[in-house]
Amino acid sequence: MRNPFALLGLKRDADEAAIKRAYAQRLRQNRPDEDPAAFQALNEAYRRCLEIAANRDEWQDDDEEMPLPSEVAGSGGAADAADEAQPSPYDADEVDETSEDDSPRFVRRSFDVDGFLHELSERAQTDPPHALDAWLRSLEPLYSLELKQALRTPVASMLAHNDPLPPPHALRLILQFFDLDGVSSDDDWLRRQLSERLREAHEAHALDQEIARYRSPGEETPVDREMMHELLGPRRWLRRLFLLLVPLLPSRLMSLLLTLEQDYPSAADARLSPESKDFWRRVTDRDNLNWRRLMVTPLRMALYGGGLLGLVALFDANTRPLQDVAMSFAVLTGVLLAWTLITTACRRLATHLERMRGYYPPLLYAGLWFAAGLIASHWWPAVAIILLFAVGYVWSLPRSWPEHMVVVAAMMTGAFATHMIGRFALNGGQSEGLTILNSAYAGAIPVLHDLLYAWCKRLSLDEARRRVGWTGWIAAAHMILAASLPMWLSLLKH
Image (cartoon, rainbow, N blue to C red; front, side, top):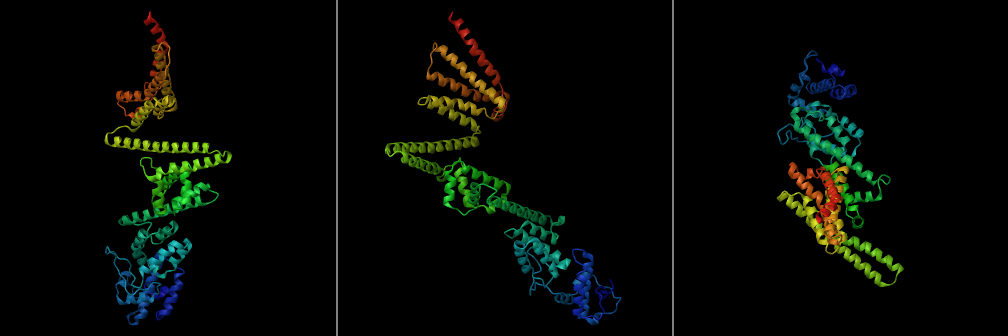
């Protein structure tokens, strides 16, 4: 373009006010987002006209070549005068033109970057998308492509470090407006940082929607809503006591917490109450002992026992039944506390041996329960029989259902075979010791089989527990032994 006044539709003697009016009218036809090249040419003509109006003696003729933008930017005082002539909503007396890494922050001396970033951060949190977009497009200084390019670094830094995060729609709009969603390979660090912030914004928005769903009366049950309120905080003792006293609710709440942390890791860590998360982790942690976990059993027994005592007192004024019920609940509380202590000690021992010695934890558990069954047989034979048989049954659970039934058949036939051998040994008699022996042999069959099978096949014990192995042959051998034993014994007697 040779004549900047002609581009604005003005005569060459137009004054500063006429130049601004003509520029404002032409801006309606040449928007920067629709035709950046035409807008850039219009902006350069506008700057040149303002410069000529301020320095009339520098104008030569209509055929003078218009200088390049770089020449205009380096023209010193004339360019500064043009900048001052163009109004800006952000004015600053002093502008720091470099950031901490010596990269340019912006190029306009009359543009207050700090004030702009502060207002942008506030509007991103409060304004809807259309209002934020309209505000950005209404800022005339941002029509300059040079200014928008220079603002990318401070805007990206603000988005990367400001908390709380703006909503995803606002963050995406700002990225698109400043061309931060398509940075070059030279700005790879910037792209990664902004992508991470956009991901966090989407994650926080999704968590807010999930929380809103739990708070809606028709979406979830009242218990689910109370569990979500407990995780969000603040702490309320009545609500926490209710969740503690109802069986299965602590495990259900912990499952909800783990789901939220798995689906929304960053947002859940910032949104959920740290005190509530720590409390419920300690309550449901079966590998550690603390007062939070130990107090659950006495509180539940006191509540249920008190309710039962009150019910008994309504129908019977005699205090003897009340004393018996109270004593029973006290004994049961002690048994449950002892159970908690023993099972926790077993888990910690198994974890220690697995870490230090490489032992297989289920094998240790099976050995402990087997020993407990043998010890209990002295006082409670029926309980010991069930416990010994249950050790083998639970050990074989990792197998598929048909293979599991084969193992159960091997256990049953083993118990029957030992029973037949014992009866002949006792001349047809029967004793509790023989029944305990039958159950012990039946419970030990799966464990001993898997140990031998893993050693012979060079497998891990965990893999051996998932195979049927030789259990079918063992069941057949038991049946053959039980069927042929009378014949062999009769031959031996004769």
